[in-house]
Image 1 (tube, rainbow over the protein chains, first blue to last red):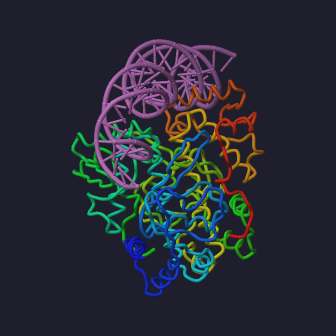
Image 2: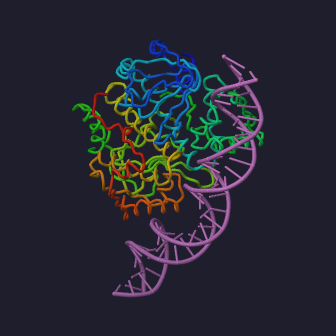
Image 3: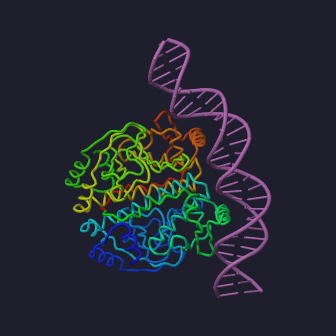
Length: 238
Length: 238
DNA sequence: CGGCTCTTTGACCTTGCTCAATTCGCGTGG
DNA sequence: CCACGCGAATTGAGCAAGGTCAAAGAGCCG
């Protein structure tokens, strides 16, 4: 699983043994159509899902139809590692486009935690990075304006996709409708639309279909106060 | 460390060996005055902090003085386990009142991940629960009204404090000013004040000094759509 | 061509923010 | 015991960001 290995080797070296374990873990695959649930709210999975290709979103439903997307996952992301440790899914994971997923049995993961300290620290690290992203989204959600927030999100996606060679840091695919983007930002569709127009008018981005392009990363970064520290893209022993 | 053990045994059994390891890990202590930093943004700690007594908050600073509190930690919370896995702190942890903290050396934690699979899964679980709380705050921040959000937060604190025997599920201490509460909710002080008044007028809560009392938990829960699933208060093998 | 989803626009409304004062609680020094 | 000072809570008034509703385009596929 190329993207997953890239995700890890960006942050630490992997031994041959560890690469073998990863291959074993990701052997079992399944595909999901766009807009279908990969993991359902309320379920207690017996395996964890790792994105092989395609994008997915973590969706929380609130009473009376309000929804919030709390995370967007790209190839190489271990989507619900935490289902290994938690009892019941308090939210769903939905395919944004058609995607392929590796189903990693929990007992295999448990074996890793028993016998492979370093690799299990790396998996743990992935959940820590996810948490860092949640924190950053919380900051954005409560303390940035809608335009700043949109810009921040696009900077983040550009970087995360660059790690897995799906972007040069400027152009990338993002298969999300403005409604989905609104759910991710905690904004209304209408407001997302107007925010994007503002970014376009400022010549900061273009967005046609699922093709996003950041025209001036430095300016977008400055506008949104984006600081990539939280993605921890640093290679060192962990 | 009583509260920490309660936090874990709420979710799984601990062996005698594991209890011993925990005692060893939490041997070294330090106290912090109210409003001082326990961990500083930008630093690369060599130990992780576990709250022994007192409350702390995870604070992110944004340009031009905006702040966001992304988490509130109570006794028994492992405040920055993730510093074991991440390179640099992208935020600070600040003491809300005067508190005592156990300093757990990273090399000790690393040994646990090498030799004690079950205990390291439990530590990992704690970071997964933290992440679940972040997700819930994201939902609250983007999709709940200010009053709902305040209610949700108070329900959460009541439950988390009950786990560590610091609350009967109704009354508890919460040493936060309305300004701090605003930073935690992503709201302005003025609005927090008005929201709390609304909760008081509806006879749902009282709050004097740092003494909070929930007068009608069921009603507050209903109002805020609080569902405790995400706290994963279920005892089973992990 | 028809139907579907997604984007865009306009008009209006509401929640929550800002600014500025005032009041309250409480500890301190006289 | 009382005046004073200080941080926190509270209030009022006006404003603005973002929400809602409704309709009109655009793009796409069968």
